[in-house]
Amino acid sequence: MSKTPSPITKAVIPAAGLGTRFLPVTKATPKEMLPVVDKPAIQYVVEEAVAAGMADILMVTGRNKRALEDHFDRNHELEEALTRRGDQDKLDSVCASTELADIHYVRQRDPLGLGHAVLCAAPHVGDEPFAVLLADDLIDPRDPLLARMTEVRERHGGSVVALMEVGPDRIHQYGCAAVRHLAGSDGVRVTDLVEKPAPGTAPSNLAVIGRYLLDPEIFDELRRTRPGRGGEIQLTDALRGLVERGRPVHGVVFGGRRYDTGDRAEYLQATVRLACEREDLGPGFRSWLRDFVGAQELVGV
Ligand code: G1P
Image 1 (spheres, rainbow, N blue to C red):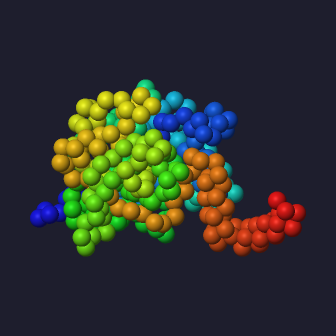
Image 2 (cartoon, rainbow, N blue to C red):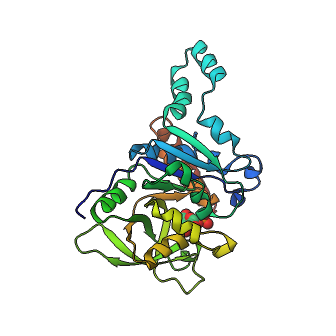
Image 3 (tube, helix red, strand yellow):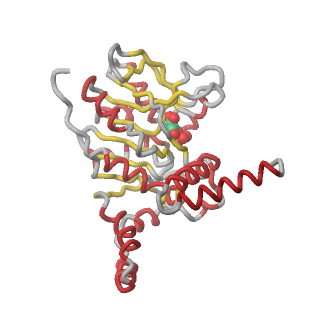
């Protein structure tokens, strides 16, 4: 590539899903607001975008998502109460989410799929490349993924998706990419994509995970994309459309720590791991956990 593509400063976070995997708690609480230790899951995702230089965030929300807006907005009453009490640490933690980024909201009025949610971002994004971060995917901040994706984009151009190797028993839960290796590069070239392939038909063991750097041409492709799996407009199908028309789509294979916080078991794992690693909670929690696991083993659980 002769010309370095312009840096990405806008990130889109689709957050309109119903969170059915987590019912009943998600009946009245957005799944993105579930705490991972003491911060809502979505705050980790916003922090990840900001750390990668994307401080203009658009959340695509839906019904029942008021709590998201409240969390990233000021709460004067609470701030005043904490100031009166002189509780600076708590005050800092309350203000952190407000000062983190420039957050905008758009509503996805009809639940027509992830591709449709991304298309709702078109007026805000305009004719610029942008990132999409799925709020269910929590990437450990010590394993930077967006930075690697940015490098691949700067070197090879086009759109870039994050990929992860998964077992054959799990690939049907994801978008799946067939790829070709690029000599001397961290990235791969995507040659085909299938959204949630039927068991036994996946073109590879590489799952698309929820981080995308997209060229604005994706919007036209999404407008052309017909409903696919589940009767929904799929982002994977639009990316496949780009691949079929010879447009560059690359991938980065991620081997770091990633938690699907929309899955109950992985959500618990994320909470335990991050709690163990916290300076304030970690020492006490780790020692309790050791005793707890030891006691479980003794009684043969
Ligand atoms: C979405 C995408 C899928 C991707 C997955 C990653 O699916 O459609 O391609 O692999 O996120 O988490 P969802 O999990 O929303 O059904």
